[in-house]
Length: 121
Image 1 (cartoon, rainbow, N blue to C red):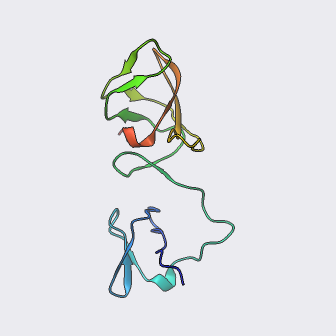
Image 2 (cartoon, rainbow, N blue to C red; image 1 turned 30 degrees about the horizontal axis):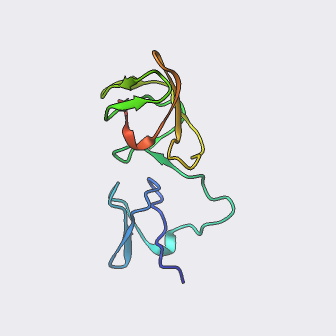
């Protein structure tokens, strides 16, 4: 038997915990019975990309940078806190944590980590 609990069926959070006879998600407060949880199979959903505060990101979203970033290869440019980046693309993680791709006006096409952005309203 596996010690790992299933992800939340509502928001796909991996931080579920047992609360009596139910499983609970601390991210969205959804509660469900472990018997109702779908069994992982070959058609399991692809990994979910989340921003710094836990919002799910999808292709085309706009995000805001939550901390200053030095941009490599730009001659010492800095992407300032609060910079809005439009039309992101989710890319497979290349092993270095960069899982977003976007075009930013002064820098051109750059790679970002989802942990340093927040979904814009």
